[in-house]
Length: 252
Image (cartoon, rainbow, N blue to C red):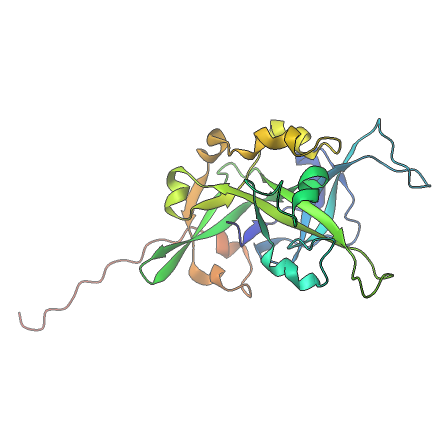
């Protein structure tokens, strides 16, 4: 699963890295080393541009960076708070689940991340790990998005929300947690974002790339990341194991 991740690059940097336009205007969140559910996040979408009358141009596609809230709220939901429990969508069932089906077919996105956090249960305690690319390049986490409006306030502004697609973890990652975000290779991004491709057209992209996963660094980090109140680059620093302390023999 993915319940916390880091996103520290500004939209201008991501625009170059992902060949996209910065459409965040003044809404872009700052560097966040501990992204938690319901926070504003950066997402990359590809859409047909519209003219002044709202008519899309089928011959043109624009890739842009937008701001969304993490935690997908289905269009038919009566309460935005449902998004708290819908931060992740299983890639195996997203095309058929009512909450994600339409987004899987027509509203896919990329959630760029420096890396994500996962916790390994060791007895009664949970040990946090940070999974990232050692070369510093962003992870292209596959995501879904939609727009929701409060049914009790038809004139209220649209709330744009998103979810991370997850898949089975394997290799060393599976020893930490059985699920992981679906991270796409760069050559698959155009196909994933294509606004005219449906669920069946991207089904082949839902299997995790072993080549990508094999490059990940699995880094133990401080338990400070456990609290969403903590935020800063120190959360990404490798945590060195505590030295063993020899027991004092009082009877020697």
